[in-house]
Length: 97
Image 1 (cartoon, rainbow, N blue to C red):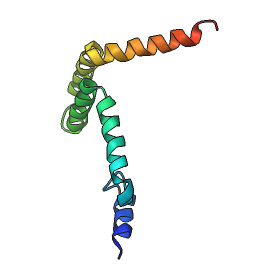
Image 2 (image 1 turned 90 degrees about the vertical axis):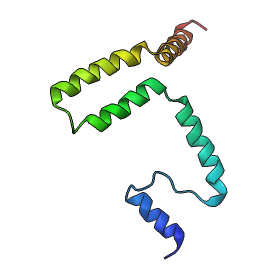
Image 3 (image 1 turned 30 degrees about the horizontal axis):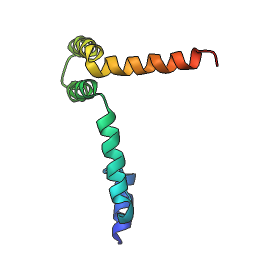
């Protein structure tokens, strides 16, 4: 079986997120890196922690932790920056032309 067929099967089974030709590899890596770097570090890290604890914690403890992580995320510098950008975009759309 050709390698491309194995890659397509791995993608279909959810074992890999992307399958690209060799010529497109560097571009795909650049694209993924840009997406990761644009993510809010605090909320991304805390979301990962919540995902990992979801099946190992009681619902009450999970919800308590969720609200604490939400509070931490909304206090983070990247959240404040994202909200300022969002407000600026909305203000630009609302201003008369």
